[in-house]
Amino acid sequence: MYVHIVDKKKDGIVVRGAKMHQTGATNSHEILVMPTLALKGGEKDYAVCFALPLNAPGITLFFGRQVNDTRRLEGGKIDLGNYDYGIVGGECLITFEDVFVPEERVFMAGEVESSRDLVTRFATAHRQNYGGCRVGIADVMIGAIALLAEIQGIDKFSHVREKLVDLVYLAERLYACSLSCSAEGKPTPSGAYFADTMLANVTKLTASQVFYDLSRGLHEIAGGFVATTPSEQDFKNPEEAKLLNKYFECKAGVPAEYRIRLGRYIENITSSTPFLEFMHGAGSPQTQRAMLFREADFEAKKRLAKKVVGIP
Ligand SMILES: Cc1cc2nc3c(=O)[nH]c(=O)nc-3n(C[C@H](O)[C@H](O)[C@H](O)COP(=O)(O)OP(=O)(O)OC[C@H]3O[C@@H](n4cnc5c(N)ncnc54)[C@H](O)[C@@H]3O)c2cc1C
Image 1 (cartoon, protein in one colour):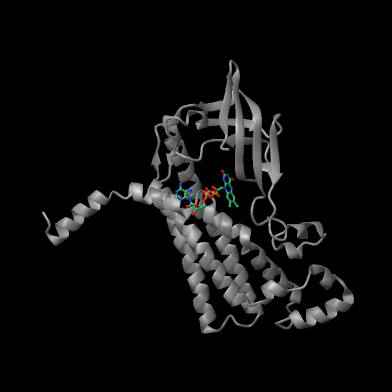
Image 2 (tube, helix red, strand yellow; image 1 turned 120 degrees about the vertical axis):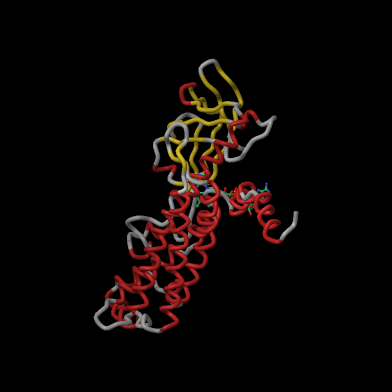
């Protein structure tokens, strides 16, 4: 089912198979396809890398559904939580049914021995950027909950402050990973920099852990209204709005709408798609652990331990 070569012609190759979960594919003009595994002998046909326009004959895109996606069709903005920037990229399953790729667009065709390097380089760059990108999201999440705590009148309680500090710690921990894997990067022979593989994997593994803890903190501080607020449409009906605004308002002079906007943002950013994205994007956590095992140099660490405890 993985994309692979099914025919070789004198001016190109023919490929078949599917790529799952492609973020932003429908917004793109072209797709760059490459292996996602280190391949072995006998898997030559799967060692294929190429770029094609998305409207090339034989390519079909199936747009993925997300929780609450039909809210986009209701004509409102608030219930989407993050109308202007979106939450996660709009993933597609892309199928290739005997698609012709012209020679000049083929970057790899059968070089099994290069697949491990290609995957490691792609994965390292992707795992590195999880640090910067996800810390940006974390900053918005922390800002949203700090603001909400203020509106709900709980920001001065010591346990809320403590929880806010814990959230900052999580975000900054990820930021530290992100900086270190980049700062420890080295130039490749081409002159392009390559992040530190070990630290980039630590960055992504940290991102997948941190997001769950961040979300738990937001849920705990925000309260249950995040899950039970009526539709934006109800707030547009003047009679209902009178009652809803009265009962949703927390702080005199701060419109209930502000609280609801923040609640909707939290609801959306902590809905299932972002969780899955943090968990599996750039590879499942186990793939990062496998890299840590590979890069750890246990023998050197054993030598150090022997020296310290006096084992010859
Ligand atoms: C929102 C989102 C956006 C994404 N965007 C992109 C994108 O733009 N481009 C892209 O290429 N990919 C993208 N991905 C795909 C992502 O890289 C994969 O989801 C990830 O690599 C995990 O693969 P999988 O989903 O097939 O899960 P699986 O590989 O099926 O993993 C499920 C479980 O099985 C375990 N497992 C799998 N294989 C083995 C094995 N051989 N031995 C032991 N355990 C195993 C894993 O550790 C995991 O616990 C995206 C994913 C998500 C969720």
